[in-house]
Image (cartoon, rainbow, N blue to C red; front, side, top):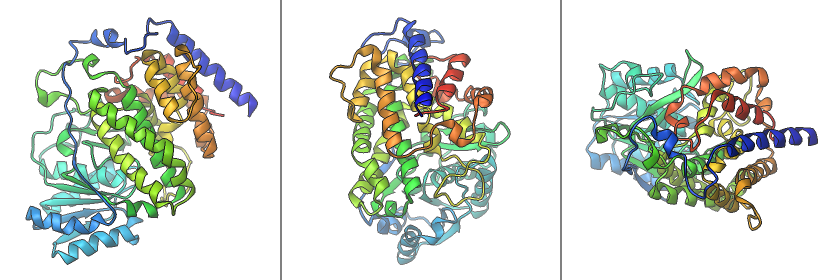
Length: 465
């Protein structure tokens, strides 16, 4: 283990040393000039978020909400595992009690693909629904958003709304049917965002659809549902919350992002860090630091799990408008190129790297790399996560946060880097190739990155401890 730790330390120092070559050792963001070279930077940001209702047992109000909307035919989307669990019964009880006409689609794939999205879209088109309910984690909610979008725009080609450069990235101009999301995991925050992520099988990478138009009408956050999450599902969801908060807080500022849209319709959902998103990101990070370990170690700790459920939504409000950057951009090929790894506590019949795990394993390397752009933010995050920064130097901000994250993950017995998922240095070129199309998020990194630097980040993430 000592040898592995030495190698990790060497790689992280090399990344930091490379960072120090650029004139970025200020206490504020200074990278905007390089980004601005591609066009005039933006001057505004926009906050868009679903309505949120939080409280124990709030699922019982679902049927009344649909009644109030005056809907006639509801599509309920979930997965086959949740169909057998109490959260689904709570949904069905509310719908039945309030006389709601509904059909169930329970074939959602954990970590969706373009094909699983298209299967759900076909179901939605045939059903001619006037509203949707998504019960589940990010996979279910994202699938339901996509089904609603394409059923509402039946003439559209699938790639029309998929993010460029993989898809055409067209703005959504059609009116969608109301979607109520009932999250059962504390991770993606998908109940608050206009983003839907999937594996594009042809290229073996994750991509997605990002538009304010697809955000849910309402998110019903019922902390009772989190009590049914197994240990590793809780952990990986929490890691997603952690990285949502860290990445949105350290993202390129909105007024340094380019190009400036010629029409507000074209302003991206992920706009860069901004004063309002910052508040939500820091709030979520404080909750993660206080409650995530408790939520993982004791499934009966209702206080911890309820707070993590709220942290997921809080981080969702933050990153749903600010965006994420390199941890997420690099995670998509990590998930998409999975070989044989099957995560514990996930009842699936295919190899699977859970999203939160694929994101967090690169975080020590990523934040070492980005720290010189905004060192004070990285030190603040490390302090919130428990580090003593009283004697820390600005130039060491990245290493301090990286060490804090590694200790946090080691305490939770998290897989020791990408090698534990079946990857080796031979896979780095493919991992880099899969990261390059993720410009929607990688360009929000406060520091631009070359292919060589991405390779170094992946190498540094092969072993953590």
